[in-house]
Structure formats: C-alpha cells, structure tokens
Image (tube, rainbow over all chains, first blue to last red; front, side, top):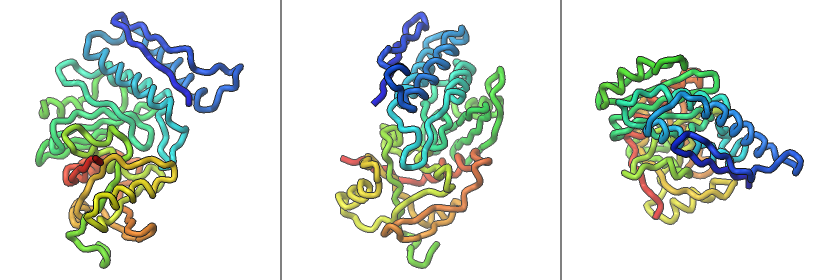
Length: 170
Length: 127
C-alpha cells in the first residue's frame, strides 16, 4: 500500500514524507498518480494565496483527501474514480475564495471524482458545491421549502449564486 | 412503482464510506448520487427486520470485501414522489435500481435529487 503524509505548519510549509517509492524501485501506477498529485498540489499550495486559520483548516482538509486518495485504487469496484490533480488544484483555489464570514464546509469526494464542499445545518438546510477538473462548479441547496441548483465556473471571485444561498443559510 | 414492490415498503442504500454518515446519524446526499457510469442508484428492498441479515447482505454484495458501516432507508413511494423510478430487477434477490436521473451533464440536478433522497432517508449505523 502506498502512503503519504502531509504536515501543515503555521507558516504554510508543507512537508511531504519521503516514503513514496521512487521510479527506480518500480513505482506502481497508483503511486505515480499520487506523486503527481502531491507535486502539483504542493506547488500550488506554496503560492501565497491563503491566510488565516480557517483557510489553513480548509487546505488541511484537502490534503487529508490527498492522503485518502493514496489508498484508493485507481478505480474501485463501484467504478468510482478518485479526483485527478487538476480537480485537487481547483478545489484548493475554490477553498481560497470562500469568504471568511461563512463556516468552513466539509470536503469530500463524489463518486465521479469531483471534490465536494458541503455546508450543512440539517438535512433540510444544506448547500453542496462540487468542482470538476475543468473548473466547472455545480451546486444545489435546500433551505426548508426553498430549493436552488446551478452551475458556474471557477474564476477569481467566489461564485455569486453560491454566496447568495449561503447568505440565506447563515 | 413496480407491482411487486408495495408503496409502503422501504428501500435500503448501503454506505461503505465512514464519511457517508454524519455524527447526527443522517446520511449524506453523496451516498444517494447515481453511479457515474450507469446513471442509476443501487438499492435493496428491506426484506427482513433482522438486523444481522441486513448487514450480512451489505457484506455479501461487495466483491472487494468491504463491509457496510451504515445504511439509509427510504420509502419506495417517496422515491416515486421525488420523480425517480424504481426498477425492481430482483437480481441479486431484492435488488432494485433507482432510475430516471438527469444526465451527468446536469449534475446540479442530480445533486438536488440526492439531497431530497437524503432528507427523506433514515440513517442507521452498524453497531
């Protein structure tokens, strides 16, 4: 089993453990994918686009996802794919755009490999946004009797449709 | 609904991911999203009230040996009210597919339906 660990320091330095097998020792396809995820995510992560404790927690959640990806087969028996590194990078950028006035969402992976961000109060008050490798964002929400859904693309600002619904929820 | 599935019968969606059930015991909507390739949701008719038999089924249906850690139960009639279709194929026994999902290109609509299913489902954690 391939494993990797990430340590997130207060100064945002990311340490990737060295127990990822090297190509010289016969890297598996799974480990190779993981290494690509790590290298690309660390490059992006070390750019100064985040500040504050909430951003640190969000980014840590995404790195935790990376750790989980390390133990996923490339495609499991359910035909579910793990996210690729473009999706991870987009998730990091999306996380950096979330206004600090909202609580941090829970981050997870959808069956199709998109990274999801879930703001949850109770089952009837929820908003989920999923981001894809090409930057497409889809979202859906419930606020008791009200339902919303829509799509947008990752830009330099937090999507207004999602913000408007979160303003209602929180 | 199929004639061999009563409207008051419950359908079970098994959960294998520890993040699929929240601390408050509710099942997350992502557990009700359709399979990305087949665009359907695999469920089972609640064929017994025997808990151990239900959990045994959750284990038997996974070729990778994963064990079910939770399940969501939802009435068959509720699925129909939401606008989805239950195809009771009984293969394997008691199996059904929830169909009628929007295409993958309209994932926001899939998410919305999954949220409604989760809202109407009762979560059970394996003890």
